[in-house]
Image (cartoon, rainbow, N blue to C red; front, side, top):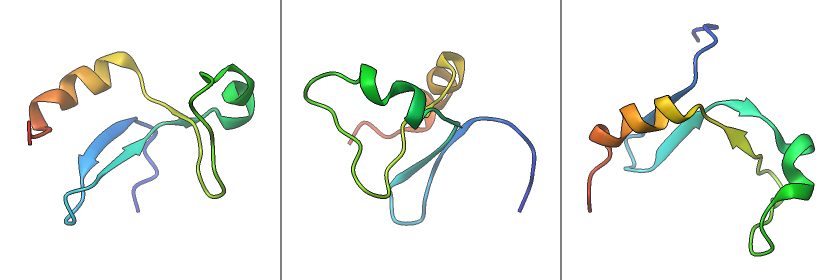
Length: 62
């Protein structure tokens, strides 16, 4: 496992996507929109805007 500290978005062999980012669950839980929630085993992860924009080209449209 690489211990480098860099946010990333990548596609898994299942076709799902994984996101590496800063865990901000405790800080942002009370600021979520009314229709959002954090379930057991879930975390609010913040990914810098530029990382998500760069990942866009790798995300299929369908």
